[in-house]
Length: 272
Image (cartoon, rainbow, N blue to C red; front, top):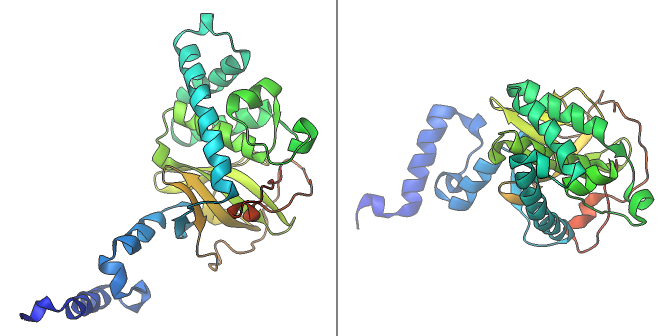
C-alpha cells in the first residue's frame, strides 16, 4: 500500500498545510476539509448573521412555510397575469402591490430595497392575527395581506420577499429570518436582502435599513430562503447575542408565544 493510501494520514497532511497558511484562528478540523456535510455547513454560514444553519426535516415551522408556498404559487400566477395586462386585472390588491414593484424596478441597489421596505410598511397596518382572524399564527400570501390592508410581521416579510423577487432581486439574495427579541421576550420576522456581500434588514418596525451586524437585542433563530427552512446552529457569537440600541420605529407590543416552538408540531405566532 502506498503512503497516501491512508486516508487519515492524507487528511492530517492537508489540515497541517491549512493551519500553516491560515493559522490556528481558522479553527478547522480535518473533517471540514473533505466532508460534503461540513462543506455544506460552511456554505450555509454565508447566511445572514454569518452563522451556520441546518435544514429542518419536520415540525410546525416547516409545515407552516410549505402551506405559504402553496398559496404563493396562486399569487404569483395572478401577479404575472396582472403585470402583463393591467387593464384587465381584476384584483385591486394585485394592482396596489405591482405599483410598489414598478417603483422599485425603477431604482437600483440599496434604493430598490429601501423603496420596497418603506412602501410595504406604509401599505399594511400592523394587526395581530387574533384581532384579524380570531386565531394565532396565520401566515398570509401578499395578495391576501394587501386585500385586507393589515397583517403582522411575517405578513410584511412575505410580501417583501415577493416584491424583491419581482423587482429583479435573485432568490439567492433574499431571506426571511425569525429573530428572538430578547428585550420583549417575543419572536419577530424580518426580511434580509444581500447587496454587494452585505445583508440589509427590511423590518416593519423601522423605515431605515441596517446591516445584520448592526441588529441589536435580537437573536436569530430560523432562516427561510432558497435552501429551504433552516435553524441557526451557532447562537453563541456576540454578533447574534443580546445587543443594545435597536429601537423599533413602530410600537407594537403584543404578548405572543415564541416561534422557536414551531420546530415542534405546536403552532404559535410571532410578534408584530
